[in-house]
Image 1: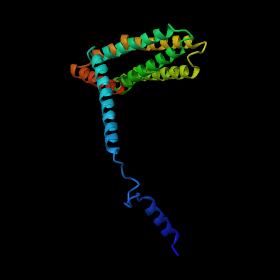
Image 2: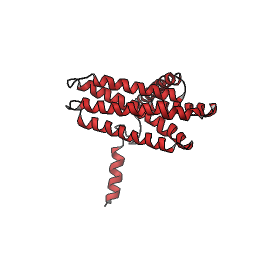
Image 3: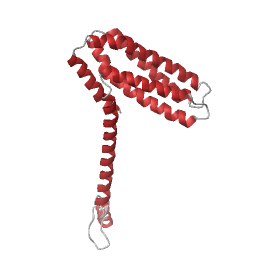
Length: 209
């Protein structure tokens, strides 16, 4: 009498044979799988190239602005402009509010990454620990505002009030960087150091764009 193992082996062998009696692996590709796979890979390659090109264009435009501090100041202005668009909405424009919050979140994420990965470490290296720690701690409050706005929803009665508070924080943060910390930091830099930080800010901005 055939054992259970033999029966299973026999059943698997029978189920993988075609009607013509030829054995076929369960992992074999059908005749039209090649073109489908090639088309999928081509589509992925096109999508990657398009995204890479978009990043290059966006960060290339920022790089043309000038040094690292000028790039970051421009990003401050861009974020504040998004805030102003948010403050110009009303409770019936929930979709627009959601889209603007998504745009603001991306802009602030990119900006924070550039500062936290390049500028603040360079500040600490230059013995400006207090300023670096204070500015980075404010980024935590910025993330908290983003969380709260997402949780409360765009139709909340106090949505505009929360956005206004958020804008005030970002404006004060930007003012401290642009008018106090960055000018003092840049003043003591060599041309090589300035160029290096500019290059790193552009590099990190590219990957976050």
